[in-house]
Length: 291
Image 1 (cartoon, one colour):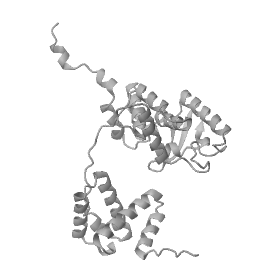
Image 2 (image 1 turned 90 degrees about the vertical axis):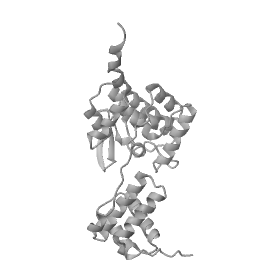
Image 3 (image 1 turned 135 degrees about the vertical axis):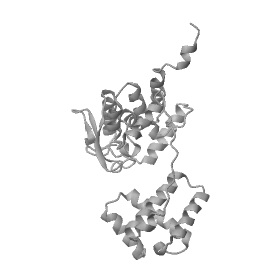
Image 4 (image 1 turned 180 degrees about the vertical axis):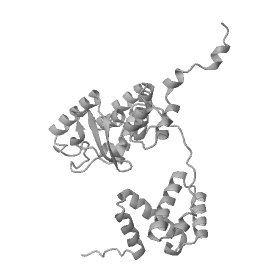
């Protein structure tokens, strides 16, 4: 039995080629295609001749449907690429109006709560992966992309290849984290769950990496086991890494490099949640106390 090859319209193929020419990441390509598909669904026809008024009505429909600012802006980013690059209609792309994303303070655990969270993970692989996220300040996608060869015990560093923004960097590797990684390596090797130069955290098949979805499920289960009453995600551990370093008086520019942030003001957000900084300041109200 043969399966028919899906027919791709010339417009879609052109957009695929445009994205491939610019070597956009697969996830970015999928997101951009979804944005154009959503516009086409709204119009009820191919979007090659979309008008400024139709774009305006489409954005209003997204708002009325309750789309979050993040989802709304991601959709507009995909459409902006489609209009500017694929259709060569840059003037029309300027009609799109991104919305401001409210900046909220991240949830931060105490060091003791982090220890409980890691201990609450159901197995050694998950405990070690959470330790890497906290101990090196890595994103979930960066944790699952690590390979055994990325551990540089001589320089006490972790090599992060093609992190966010397609940038390589080195993350810190503490003695405690190195020992945990070595313990995991010995156990995984003995059980045949890790290849010599393979993924540091393999999935069910050792030739594939653990997925970020699996890692997110693991941290939620660990939080439940630890009976934490705060909303916890994998990114919480990255927030904790930055905040706890700041509370240790580590220079914020050093933290910026360790996190791989392009902009210092992104890192500066943690000054608002570092309680040790707040405690170091004497409130003017203290001067009103009776001597």
